[in-house]
Amino acid sequence: MAGLYGSSTTQNIPRVALAELVGTYFLVFAGTSVAVSASLGRPIAGGPADSLAVALTFGLALVALVNALGHVSGAHFNPAVTLGLAITSKFPWTYVPAYLVAQVVGAVLASLTVWATFGDAARDEVDLAATLPAADTSHVTVLAIETIVTFFLVLTIVSVATDPRVQQSVAGLSVGFTLAVCVLIAGPLSGGAVNPARALGPMIVSGQFDGVWAYLLGPLLGGIAAAVFYAKFLAKGEEPSQAEAEEGSGTGVMSGD
Image (cartoon, rainbow, N blue to C red):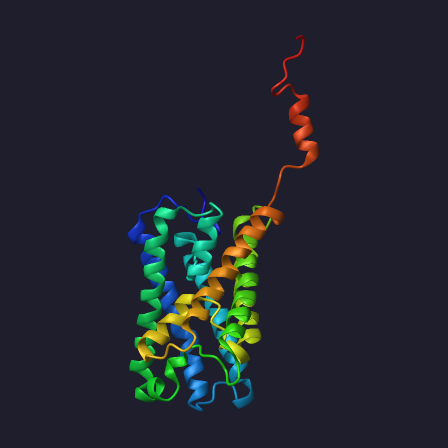
């Protein structure tokens, strides 16, 4: 079975799990480092641009990681992607536990690194950029927005990375820019996790778990729904003319009966 971005699903499990750990680590470390800097008032590209910088950092990091590690592990870096692919038979279930553990461990290690590099203020004042509900935002709203944005992220991923009609040269850019847009959309309400591992890493290290169930369930629901939707309605199917040609060639029907 072929994996995302030209990867193989018959590789050594520890090898691909390590790639997922390293990739998730860098994705979470890059994005939350910029978010912590912005929250602590350390200018990134000017005050008003801080929120844009956070989304772009997550997106650009994913572009780089897809190109660097996509051929190794498929560059999931997100439990919503892994489970969505597994449920639609695009990824073997035997790999799922290793991927999920690697993704969460990578996110936790990233948060520990942010704490170590930015000091106690990063943890005590801004919770290591943990995604928490904004003021007056309910957990149900968090669940809804995280489900919606993750749906479109995973829809983009399964489209550009599993369909042979798409040129692989555009895959990294498409996925990365989609993540940036998703973070910009959901950021004002939920912080824009779009990824259970990205949500869990800072939460575990900072000890802040407000609405954790919504940050886990929302992306998983969105990711699974997107993968199923694409597989059922948008994936490449057999053209009617092709089916008719095969039938006319004698497949299943012997002439002269």
